[in-house]
Image (cartoon, rainbow, N blue to C red; front, side):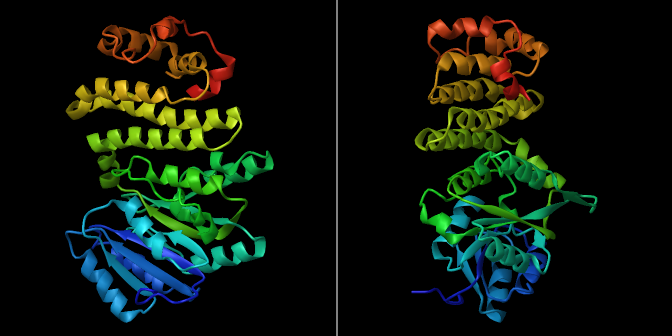
Length: 359
């Protein structure tokens, strides 16, 4: 049975997770309902908002029969809320918008037309970042990376690694049940894992260059990335990545690039904790959990740990590590085979094979 408000054959399903955004949600919804592409369905998932966001969603649904509103009974976070929308989406393509962002009025028409002309599984738009100062900054770097990488025959899952909301995805991608958002909250990388899964199963991508997604990146957003749950969720993201790349076939070179890209994020968050007094005591536990996850690496662990040490990007970084209480008390080595301890005593000679992992 098709839920009330969803048309039978929409060209694009637009999924919007909603949580405490009463100051922004109207701008977001206005740009969606006024899209030049009319054959759309709009799925709003109110994730137990404590403000007036849910009522605003219901208000819009009363005036537009393309809108359906789901009200979660418990807070799921944006990733699992998007999964709720995926399960009922009927569109040929599926897109996502964060409820405090907005898009150009021809956004979905441009993406859909590009998809049909190029027979693309994914179509990606350009993005514009809006900061506290209100200045709009056009971001072209990711699109350039994707284009250049494809010219070099690199796999898409190593290229399209963030800005998941800046694209539409053919619904056949979601026939692989694994292509969902993982159960990660607090900004720790549910979007990264979703893109890894979606792009691994995608055969083609095209770009829409004349329409934009506007991403609101404020100081309040950034401050939320300095809390303990954020750092904990980073480890969850690393685990999900390892589970996926261990299960699915790819050359070792591609495996290592996917692995170390995410591991660098884990390592960098460890370094950030030094400067956050409220959570600095968690660093030892974080390091122990990170090292335990390294055991899931499916190739030679000696090679891995050599890269791990040299991944601390300079000789001074390694010296600080060796001088720290963490190193002296062996917390980095608690769960490692004793024979690998010597790798933490290596000097900082350049390892050509691992040099890229320290960037």
